[in-house]
Image (tube, rainbow, N blue to C red; front, side):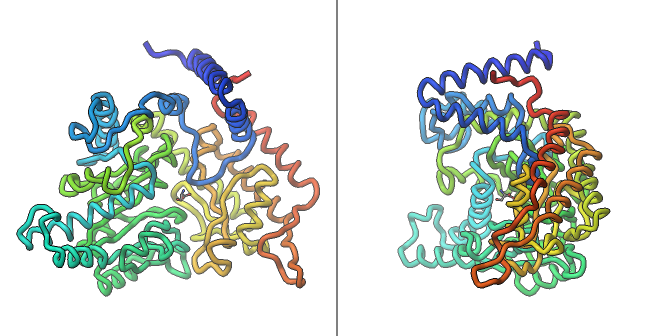
Length: 484
Ligand code: DSN
């Protein structure tokens, strides 16, 4: 029998109170920090686009003895004995993922989004380069290659082309950014957005792809506030013979919740789809890969090729979160995330603020803070002083570079989980604009404008915290969870 919500809150309170007592008996400072983290999260406006609040069921699932088990390999094909229960967990996580997203194959082992992307890249290289190369050489196993042929294969694997969205246009570090391993392991080029509109220009992308002829075309983003047409991405990939890989880490919850359908849903169009499970999908911190049957065998080789032993306790929590994401309640949540992002964007625009692309149609909003005379770093810190937790982000062709930046990225998944709606997000926009309008850049030793220091006018932080507290109290985080 399923417990009623009030019983669940009481059960959760008692579970955590007892767990914290056990932890405190060994290292009380960790128990204290854990209590403090809950208090801090409860008391701040969490607007980081890649964060959320997982359910108590998801969180509790991670704290078990599954953490103690090694299970390198795949279901039914492990390098360790005694993996029967891990097999149950991994199978359930993969089955839920396949059903939820309509995918042919799912791999639940990646520990994070970066791990998922690396695993996917190596799977594609194995499928497209290594396999055919070994076949041509007439060998099944690379250990059977002569040293000279092995060197040739290594050269082939290390000289493939990848085309991904640039970091300052909203792509992710792992989409071929030079300082990242993805930029070093591939011969890479990047596509950007239209300088006028800030939107992906599919014709320009097609022209670039035709000229560059990548093996892999990566679609997906971390800071692009718009939807992507994956049918067009597929067409472009097909025209140049590229594998289409989509990183849906940011918007997996909107796909799961059926907000992104048809050509906005990457799963029917991509060969390989990677994601994290903890952003809009609201699961545990981790990664996931979906793929067509064609790529399944090589994705399965992710551990131990690229990944360390799977975190079975986290895979268990992924299964719980994916089961939650199949519910109608989750679909309502996902729609609210997108509606709330529009409310936040409108709130900014009506108060004269400048947004990259002029708005949003996903879960995030990218505010250009140069119109406030600030860098992203100054804005991020001033907002934090006022209890508004965000992260600074580059804007296209950012004059302040990737460290100081000129933008602040806002996301609605977390506060939507708390129950914030249109009015609250409009109010959030007002508070943010008030803080930024009352922040002035500091001065460097030689009298120039500092990119880092700032002055927030007296009283603004307290005023903002008081206004936030009213909304936060109305929408408590983990209602009924009481650690006292
Ligand atoms: N954590 C991701 C994000 O914030 O978008 C980047 O890795």
